[in-house]
Image (cartoon, rainbow, N blue to C red; front, side, top):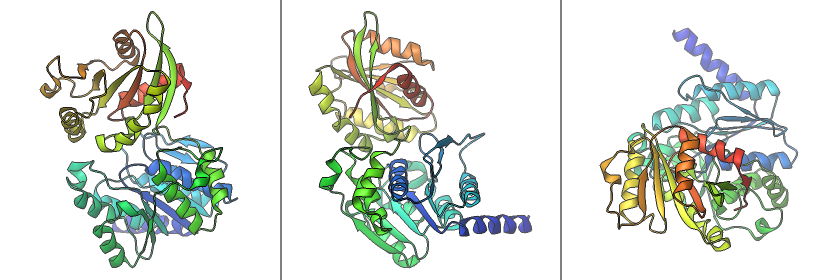
Length: 386
């Protein structure tokens, strides 16, 4: 067994060594988006880039921009990274940009420092999530993310997300820590605008900082970002006609934000939709059985007025029978748990409750019903710019 493990490590090291520039992206939110933006900026500069995202759909992105979903035959495992290293090495690409997938600090350290061994590490942000694995405070979560910092790497992080835990870990690893201002550059508002558009200035700033560090002109990087394909879990919207009699709806996917804090910026983007056509704001929150900590966060958010602007909140997936969802009928919003795992009956029930149409925003979790709802919205809806 010891010989086998040694040979495996040697094979991984050889594959990584055949890729001259390796970039890894860690953090709580925005990893898939930042990975795609960096890869797109480098491709626009004529560089051959392989990329991998992990978020809502594990995806391999090839140098020509073509994508292939990574089919998992079990639970997610960091051995996916070994596969992407091998494919990138076999293709002879000089650059790999890979989203790190681990949440447990010890496994994250192995994934980053022993598998990818990035020259550049990007840390997107520090949010309170995965509390059972990473901790209940920002300091604990930052310490967990800092485990990804490899020796002698260059680490990029937004100024407002930097913490003493990162400074300490970078110093111990001999890594260079670069803080990035999150303000949106004026040229980013020119047409075509870089994906994912206004409201994600930090993601764009990080991608610009990394590509600029690698010698890509800002205009070239922004042009590449504008053509980047959005991640399946990115904030997107569709117009659709639902119900009987038919009514106009706008369907918004913010499932991948997961926690209330990260979802706030998505909700902030909906103000324009409300001004365009004044309609009820309705939420559908998808809960995962294995993420009870997130369920508690959403219940606390409800109790603290997070959904005060919503006409109704539909709860689907797991934990729909939790007593804390039961609220006095006079306390807005009305909370309506819906059972079942079939998308069409769920959407019919929601549409029936709002016969004049509404803006329906999906929150909570992408896994399970969240993914099924987004795939359904893609089929029945017409993309709506946010």
